[in-house]
Every structure is written in C-alpha cells, then in structure tokens.
Image 1 (cartoon, rainbow, N blue to C red):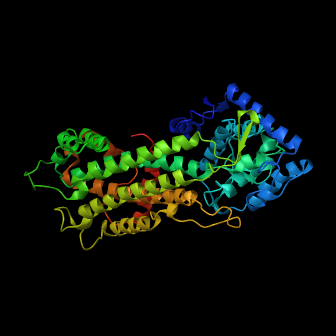
Image 2 (tube, rainbow, N blue to C red):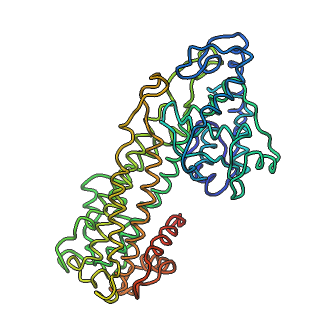
Image 3 (spheres, rainbow, N blue to C red):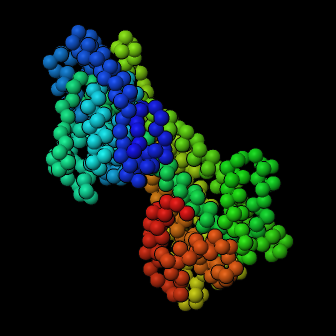
Length: 495
C-alpha cells in the first residue's frame, strides 16, 4: 500500500503503483487540510468575490464575472471545451500515472477542491479504470489543459477508459465497479486540468525506461567488448577517479564486475595498444547519461509533489493568488536533456555495431555472415541502427526552445514540455531497438570467439538472450529478431 500526502511521493513509490499494482490511499491529515482549504472557495462564491477561475472566466475571459448560480456550469463547460486532444492516446500506464499525480497535487491543500474529488481519482487507480487521453494538444502551459481535460471527463462520467484490457465508455466501467461519477463544484474543473501531470507522468515513464536501458546497455556493451576482444585497462578504477565524475566511476565498476573472469578481454599491448572510442570511452559516455538521469529524477520528484494549478489558496483563504506554477519549463528542460542523453546511448551503440560487422575494423567474418557473399548476415541490421540513430537526432531537437502565444496573447510564452516528453518516449523506443541490434551482433561475435571463454555473468546473459533470438546460421527475416529482442529488453526490468 502506497500512502499519498502531497509531499513525499518518490519515483520508486510510483513504480510500485504502476508496475506492481499496489493500492494507493491518501492520509487523513492531508484530506483534512483539503477539506479546510475548500471552505475558502465556498466563501468566495457565497460572498460574490471576484477571484480568477472561481467567479471569473478563464484565460482572456478572466475579466468576465460569473454569477453564483453559474459557477457549477462554468466548471463543466471548461472540461468540455478544453477536451480538444487529438492523436493516438498516451500509453495506458501514462494515464494511470496522471491520475496518481493529479491526486497527489490536490492533496497539497492549496487547490480548493473537495476531498471527494481526490477520492474519485484514487478509486479510478485502485479499480484500474484508466482514461483514454489523446497525446497531442498540450502547449505545456497553462499546464496540460487538453490531456487533463480528457482525464477530467472520466471523473464526471464521460469520455472513454481502458478497463480490463478493453476501450469502453466510462459509464460502463463505473457501473461494473459500482462507482459514481462526480458533479463538479466551483473551482474543481480548473483544479483538475490546470497542471503539468501529462508531461510529468510521461516523464516518469521515460525515466524508468531509460534507467533500465542504461543498465542494459552496459551488459550489451560488455558482450561487444568480448566479441571484439576489447582492452579492459580502459576501465581501470584509477582512470575514472582521476576524472572525478562518480557516474563514470560507477559505470566502469559495473563493466569490470560483468567482465570478471573473461578470457576474451585483453590488456593494452596484447593485441593492440588502444581501442576505438566506442569501447574505450564507455564509462565517460554512458556515465554522462547517468549524470543526466540523476538531474531528471531530481526535477521529476519535485514536480510529482508540486501544486501546479491556478489560483492557489493559502492561510484558509486569507490569501488567494493567481500565479504560474502550471508553466512546464522545468520539466520541458528535463525532458529535452533526457532526449539527448538517451539518444547518445544509441549513437555510441551504433558505432559498436559497425565495429562488430565491418571486416575492415575486426577479424570476424564480414558482417558476421555464416557464408560471406552468399549470405549478407548482419549487414542491413547496421543500416537500421544508423537510421534509428539519425531519426533520434531530429527528435532530440529541444522542444523547450519553442513557444507560441495562445488565449489572445494572454498566455504568451509556453514550454512545449509535453511534446518533449512524447518525443523522448519515441527516442527511447528507438534506442531499445538499436541496443537489441547490438546484442544480436555481439552474441554472434562471442560465438566465433568461443562462449566457453566468456565471463560467467556475460555467459548467463548470452544464454538468456539466445533463448529469445537464435544464432544466425543462415539469413532470415531479422526484423522479427530485432522486435522480439527489443520487447524482451523492455520487459526485462531486472538483470
């Protein structure tokens, strides 16, 4: 059971909810604070005070006063009008994360909602009712308005959800689980949609997948080092300490551990004086990716516990301030950094693939072919890797440097953070396929070298990989091998 309080949620907690199906509840203390905060909204409505989003319109309509009898309609009109998302839905696990993160943000007790709004969100999580949320349409400020509006539709019993593996009307799922839709009161529609939970949820999934890929890349690189009889001296601890980056030290240590006992690695001067950068600089390049991951994790965990709607209510209503916490720039930067760091794992991997297949760069059979000339072997797999790497270079262009005004220029600078998060996800999928290609080639190379000479750990990893993709004894449709191995890597959460 994971307990939410609006201030202490960690990525590992979210992982347990998302991937291990742990139930989630809110602390009574946080719900009490939410209830007290709600009184301020009711007081504003009752006294007819002019407060943005509660008794006024939104965006450019902020100067339009809304009468007491219309404040409920205002919230429902908001959800309907802002549900403008288009394109393929976010992955189901992302919409699940969005529910959790939105509930956690509201638990801060600054948003003016009733506790039942949060309880409804958590009921959807615990009953595994996940909104169908189109992935396109957010500017990343004023938060993720369009995606979160599709989430809010489900709260009020509209829209579609994924339930028990099927895409159905929300009413079908709610009825099956004996849950009731909510009728929104003042401020609640705005509190549901004014936030960064789409980009942050996508960002957390990205982080978890890249973290695992970064570890897997080290194991795959170790196979390649054996296949190319790489020089282990470059991973010596003193070299790494001399540079000073702990992540670099850690990568080298893990590579040394993985290759411990290998008879295929060499020392400098045994076969050659030094290796190419794609082998020799693994600690430096992969370590830099880990540095970026640490930065991204820090920013995500702050945002996971942030209140990001507008206006915010403090001191039981004594202070109601319209600000800009919905602006996604911190996460936009983080996602752009993650795109670059992820893309580089594939970039250096593709160069190792080239060294595995190019007969001018090694003493292995050309293109690892079982019959060079008659059969092409891994020749075109390198083409595919190169194509994916080049595609990633385009996708890695920073989304956060773009902006376009909206709402009649009232919202004149936006983050595009959700676009960055979406592009990061595509890059990650491409990286995984490049690493799958490297693993296919590396497994073939170590077979030529002699698997009995492998390190115990790489031998185990090789054996597991061979259960997924068999040895290349003749040309076949390698597309299937790449896809099935990439799927295996995605599902292999722990090595």
